[in-house]
Length: 251
Image (tube, rainbow, N blue to C red):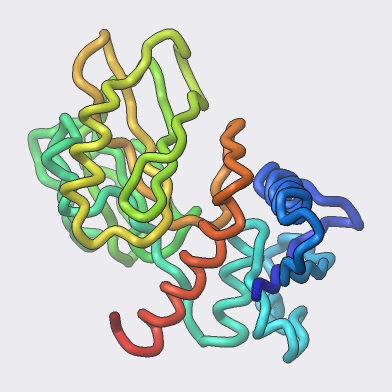
């Protein structure tokens, strides 16, 4: 049984993953060939805004649905029903060996001198602080991931489900510079704490070995053409319920 709550903005579906998810549901119902497929879909008009009352847009019965929409939409759902804000994965420590650059986590005082400009991302908020800064830049109080700045000529999003590579889409740069798939599979194998479904962004530069850019839990992720209708709804639902179990039981 699957119950999905899909975000609309001013009455329209605006996210590619929502369109594709609905197509996947249509496919699954068609392939069921008349057999009952228990998937329920509801919609909620929710306009992203800097509004502390986001979470009260949800009615109590929405707690039993899987939210599908923007980061703000899904985060508001978690705050409303679980008093929790999902954190960014950025580059998990288990993948630092595939980064092709030095990476470390620290608070606002964690800038290491001698690196010149560094790329800094929030470890506290998805879509939070993200900027290339110099060492004299004063960061707001918080937790961050610091990394050396590197050149990237081609960027690809790998889709991973149940520890298997299930899709690979170019989303920026030269689409003819194809990443090394065996390196991506090595990353997947070494990412021991991986969620059941996630995206793994990788980069290519000068046809060198493929390196990790960042990792995302499987919600609010642009698909860039990925459309495996057989598994897409289950990637959403399995990630969601696994995450809730970790919140509840710590595993």
